[in-house]
Image (cartoon, rainbow, N blue to C red):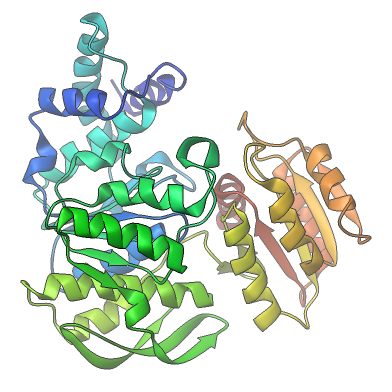
Length: 427
């Protein structure tokens, strides 16, 4: 298969693959020689912040000279972005070669009745095969959904981390933060260190209990709060001290108060690694400062892009805008998936905007139609609300309305964030 055929094969499994615990994934990986067993992995779960935390860890480890694989989802602009080695996405020809090999095994599984791997299982198998083939020193792996039954959960990590937990994917993971925490905590393995981002007490109790059952050492970031925090429009500075890490000043280029929490989680992981590895302090500082994570409070000119799609993510955007942009005209351009908590999201975002433009992310069947989304916003604000059929039209109108001094705020969906980035970068 060539690249286009490989991508078509991967996405062609949408709706065909059947999720049966981890059995399909284990069968597929056995057929491929279990490449995941060759990797030293850091495994990160959570509702919000897990991608940023992975990016921060990846950036630091690369500063030490290590060869680092990074696996995240979903992608913003191109499928290859999901898996990177030393910040370079998998090449088209490599993806095609490995997908051809995996496809042969998938088709044999289907023929023999062993199961139908899902899109995410195939992508995860591709990542494991590539990272093992390239003999990476570290693999930083973001959980796709939940934790306990996520396809990535067949690995044996060196350290696990759990970022902020909130209500999302409730039909799959449970309708309370405690139930969701139990699913996320499913990545915890016997004796493997766990780093927990600062959380509410009920979530902390769930994770503490799982760690006790698994005899897994727990580093709770709530016990090591950052000091001297300075929030900046384009980043933050703070002082932190954790086990194996004496007090130092750190800077990050990621925007928002929540990114300080993500940086503390990354430092917690690095602290756990320092128990058996040498990580120079200068590499940690430089890695945190240089880490980038596109599509999350990312500035492109006067356009601010954020892909968060749940109420907790909406609150993060609100906090940032109210702190740094309260005196500027805000023109909101939003689109969301219909299966998200759109109403709660709109409740938080609507008061920010002087004008609202709604669009359905293109070619996404789950997207809420623009007219339905606009109707929800009209119920929540008296400010002008517009609806558009095409993202490019919506962006052009929003930019014209914002002018040079205003801000176009893009939020509600990573799919929309990717479309906007593609349009702006192509300009």
